[in-house]
Length: 519
Image 1 (cartoon, rainbow, N blue to C red):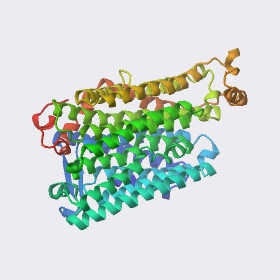
Image 2 (image 1 turned 30 degrees about the horizontal axis):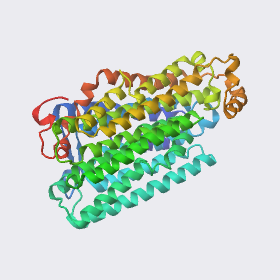
Image 3 (image 1 turned 180 degrees about the vertical axis):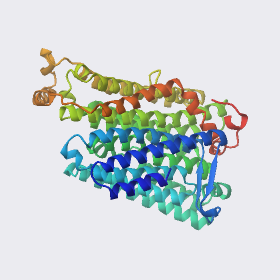
Image 4 (image 1 turned 90 degrees about the vertical axis):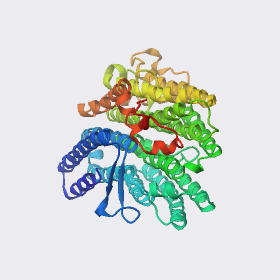
């Protein structure tokens, strides 16, 4: 799963013309197939460990795959394969996009290999190296269009990513000086509370929070995601933002479980709650579709950080084991559902941009009539973001709400409910523009004069150009998966009790995996 994308990237660099896209698609399909094979192995064996070169830790480099890592690998594989199909149509559509294609495929495959490496790494330094590969490749994709806006966004992204990496690496250096090795599971066995360990914990957490774009470190995300080409936006929002969060889970709940005190957990929970409300409010205010979806990402990422508040030791309330497992599975399932929905939204926005030449919401009258499949895609993916049944987003947010209430931390449930209402506001804002009839006399008499001007200026863009069917179907497929995984959530969630890190996370309590139960 690491080698195939890297080899595919090398092949794409050597080839020319449309052979680049076909080589990229072949590598994408092979990586997806390998991921499915590993899924069966993890399902049957629980955990897979490989010592490269036969050298065991702490001397050698180890690969480690459990249920948690498999969830992130599966999300990346699903999004990666369908984005590849989508990109094949997108970059072949016009000359401006076609010139990006020889650069898109090798950079994207390097990024995919880096992501898989992060999810398979068992030591904190190699995870840092692979996270740097992911960050640099993501910046390369961000500036793919070469416009001034994309270059500014890419530079901001690069500076934020490099600063976060520097802080993280300082923490790794302190850990090595204190303990003498960097394998996550050996560190967990030998970790003790000391000043260097506390500082390392703080530095590594801070660096990963910057990379995760948690408020107030989100400043780089909206311009990068909104200004990139549609396939890149889908990749950045759907899978790239998840890599640093995955590593944050490993750091908090495997390497430093004894340092996860209530105060730090509640602090991350408050930042997550602020991100949910602020990011959603900013999304409601936007007039451009891609920028709206980008700010939505800021808000949706905030839900992930309620986990740290819910699972930080709190004196042990009644039903601790039940709500801890519920919070854990709900959060990771939200990662999965959000990745599918957000990639689908950005891909649908790219189809609208190709069709109309703009992503201004005011240019979308009668899109429901002229592009019904794309409108349906926006609606279904939006339903998952709102957390309405029968979507995967509903399953995730329902478990988070139950965990909040059962644990006695009801105030997080209030924030989740408010976030759902704000999400509904911006999703219905998109659909409201899409369902306005183009011939309606009021279509150009918006009460807001600014919006009225935008509608008038966008008359030209209302000539809908054809969009390759594969692009439409790829976006629709991800939206449909949001619903299918909502119906069959049990099979996806059942992977998580296979994660040995859950035992450490629960502080010695018997997890669902040790008792053989499925949540």
